[in-house]
Length: 262
Image: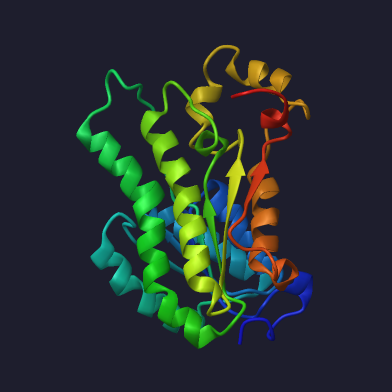
């Protein structure tokens, strides 16, 4: 039962599903959870990345780690994969939606295909997976928890990220909604809003002349974050240490939005 199986960092003993776990924040989140003994399942379109993350979790921390190629924009694929994942892990009491696409396009050029992909992966998928997880969470017990990954672009506008801003702002809205729905069953739902993180998604932007330097100069901590610095707060929000936190978002941006708009 969630809340009774583990004691490292207040970790329940139930398994956690991590989408987008083949790289970046998703991979580091899976590793952080494995570190405290939680079984993990990695979903990603990148089979090699997902398999590698699962192997790292097993080899470094000795936990059960499953991986699957799942298109989170496909509801039927989600519905087929969740029972298999629950069986593989023995229980499912946690979910982190780290899968995401950036959709870098200003209003002038955005098209239906890019808009739909960005909203489907970043926003819709998290809702559909959460819906399918209600029954597994009931079997896992009170203490089950969800963390959705939003962004500081969900709090502020960004000229060239119209669809991304819409999706990440939407994540905060649905987080609050489903947190209210699931609270009566003892399940918690929160979100994190990372700033600039050194991940494959942001790598092309970092290659632009001066981009990273300007960003670091504007950030009070004078640097961008590493994925593990996002993963550890996510692990906390999934743990019993955060047992009275639901419907909240945590901004993790080195102080950037405390002093300036992005």
